[in-house]
Length: 185
Image (cartoon, rainbow, N blue to C red; front, side, top):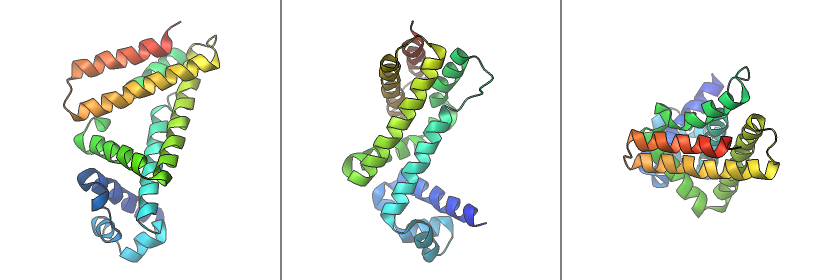
């Protein structure tokens, strides 16, 4: 029950961020959206900074979950599956993309959020580099890391431009480009 309330509060934070940006997030607004008492929001997250921190950490966990694929698949297929997940319909919605944009803006404007975002990016790229190395074991670690960084930039570009209404063919071409980068000999 307690975990469900905490999750509902965090869902409210993410929805408010996507709809109104940082200015739409307050203890009162979150409590109203989550249908809980304001004191409960304070209990779980402390203050507005804590709410935003928790939102960033949830997105970090979602990003890492994108890379968690069936270990029974061959390494190359695991990598392809992970790379294609950024274009899953749940991530190409205006609400989700707007949320990502808000969180990126917050990370560039606030040092605490920048640190969380930097840590999240590093964890995502390290996990992606590990998938690349599993598919291409002879690849030096530094090259796998470089490829992971290049793929990450393209993936973020897919999300950013999808927000602007980029067509499905462009998304498909960029997903194929991510595979080319990651799987090149």
